Image 1: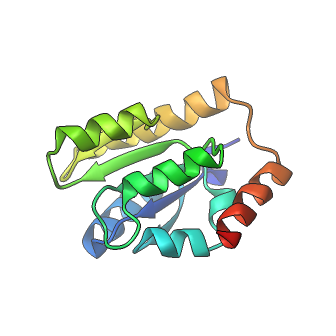
Image 2: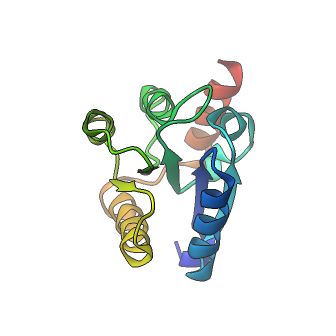
Image 3: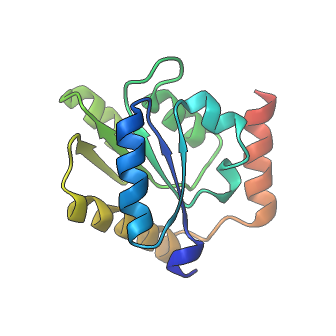
Length: 146
């Protein structure tokens, strides 16, 4: 899979973070879609095509850790990189124990963040069989019906 075909979804209630992160990831060649909430992400058609998820922890409604739990329960293979403005060690521990690829505090260093996205995508492609189109479609259907 080449760089231009990799899609990153960003879920963050902070519009300035969504815009800045989208611009950063687009500047290195990724396709990027943004969402102001976990609910909007789940209601969209983006889930089956998302290759990496950048996810805030604290958001109204479904928070980042709850979305991670739901994706894990659905056997999602999408790597998650958390970003948060809150320095809460318990959130970091929960996220990493839940399989997060990385965890950043806002504001984060651009080169380190891009390197983390690249590493998460590389690990996914090297160690995990990519989800088939059917598996991705089934994952999407599970959330639509929930």
